[in-house]
Length: 99
Image (cartoon, rainbow, N blue to C red; front, top):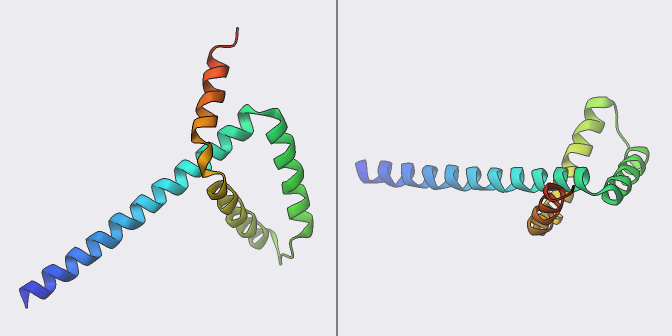
């Protein structure tokens, strides 16, 4: 009986670790996305325009529903742009070295 309990606890622990790692990755993706928007004026303008178009085209029942849909779409977009960590680091370095 104790061995089944140990196996179950090990499985639950592995699942929690996997969820935690996924959460960290999503957090990094959104952080890189936000930094990219803040550091590059053309990206900022493009994303602002796209957000406006998305909000206008989205069928929502109210502000909370719209907020949820925008939140999910932003997370998906940040995930698609997750390979930009080095580019964001380069933009940060460029910002640091500006006179």
